[in-house]
Picture 1 (cartoon, one colour):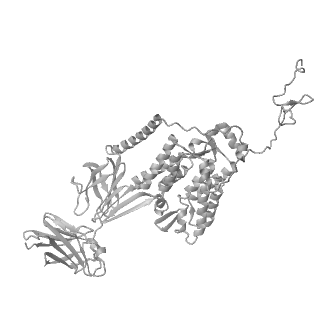
Picture 2: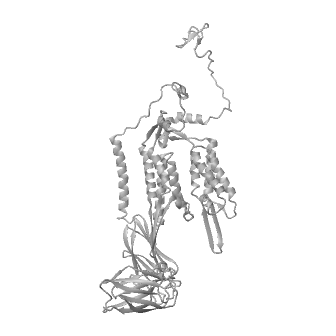
Picture 3: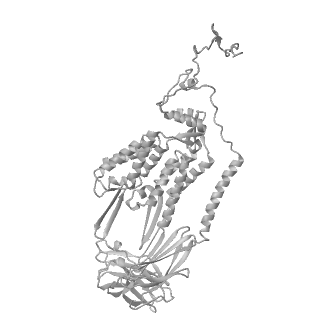
Length: 636
């Protein structure tokens, strides 16, 4: 074409022309012509994981990091296996009795296969190792598979049925192996990670709030989460339970509790990787607290045999530490407070490091072309940002305070009333009253419950019963008069329960006789007749002056010493008198036998008055009836 042949191509700057007119680069001796069409073989090599990561960075930039979610999910499922039951045992022990038991992996060391500790120690070790490795490498799924297969081969009894824990770990192993084979990487924003390398390569950026929440949550797993107290007769008991003891006790195999504990511990561990772990961490702790406050409510039980017990559960320090840790982790997602840790500090703290001679270029410096990026810009802390953070905390505290205050104004607490008819052949008519208002009325058949549930405000409430047995002898019925009542303190946002037993199986009343003699400043009452063997705990001594009364309940344990024993009660006021009661068991066997006696002595200047008729009773505790009584007058 015209003009094309006469055109001269000027060599680029920095090159020279050869004799033939070709331009020659100082670094390239020959340049091959560019091909218009490029043929690629269909069986080209598959892109490696490094190329996938590079391509993700090209698409999403430096604000994301690729993560193998399948491997992380495998690790979480492996941790779940520590809490879920691995074996379900069920059989009919008797024609009408069906027994079911669940066993976790930790219980196999002492409960099921004694003498095979090494086998199950290997299985548990493979499980824990696989779960931990899965958070760091995709090969952790193979360790989980080894744990599941080993357990399946070790437990081959006919009665053993594999349960949820085994299958959850098996699914985790399959996901971990798939993550290793597929190398499926998912882009995760750097903001959603707890520890990431800085963009400049000079160190690491650490979310200290999320890191501290994760470590605190793991530590609280071994603190007391439930504070359990109760009283039965005159004995009080107190127990504390941590998440560790709750989930490794055979009495706490419950799907809801297991789910709550699993969410909390997995969320705590996940906080070490991402602050998003605060969401399951806080959710698990809140669910556990709700279950405890509703299932283990404040309960008072009243029986017809002068029997009474109560128990209550309060949240321990571990629960509050876990809730606080979850709330801080969730807040760190929004606040995103980070601290940069320089690599030079890490090299100083490291035990093993490589010395680089001065003046010797490192591989990183050789491979780096162009100027190194500067440090990451730190977020500016302004008064407006501080005000927003403080305002957010204030709003949360205000909402929580208003919810707690509403419990004392609105009926947000629950009150359950359970009436048990212990009579074997008499149905009862029952009317339930709460604070003077009729809640429910109807018939309660024998050996059955009659229940009612009412929403009340937090605080003290009066529960009353009007009941009767119309088919009994003598017959009684609901007549509008209260037959029994008590006061119940309903906790805020919780459940309180009152159990009342009415009616009881016929019990024969023992007959006894007391011989009374003067003894110093008081009287001595000796058991001269007893038609039934009784322990002192079934006897109550009562003294009345016709207006007021006092009672003493001897302790069987204190009087069962194997030799003559005496139990002295502290002084008790009866009107203007101070009366002391001393019980003597001649045989020291803890039983109220013929010959045993008790003395009633006054203290101080005042004594039993000659113008007052005193009556001493021996009550049979199971029915609260008097076995015998004796009257006497004082000498003053």
